[in-house]
Length: 146
Image (tube, rainbow, N blue to C red):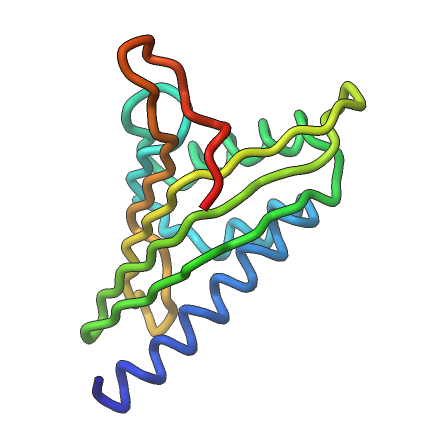
């Protein structure tokens, strides 16, 4: 790894820390600093593709309306791969907490993000969040743990 790529990895990990703090604290303002305006997101809920950062922010607003803040948000096995002005990160993440109803809930998801350095700042230009499926009944496998 080049010195510049090593520096970029540290910068991306710092950006991920901002993302995690924003999620945990229900801070949409912090999340708005992470996603590129032209983001393409394959998020956990329909439709198949969400276009633009505003759609991603709207999805996080839904999460913040379902869960009470603060939320639990854990990242495991984070990998950061950098090559120049592009990078890919992937991990398994757990969101958990108390729902607005008072019940507790949580699940592990798979997360992949493509990052691009834009005007000197690392932004997510594509992300995918998914849950495996149990076949043949098509039920989401929200009971898995890493």
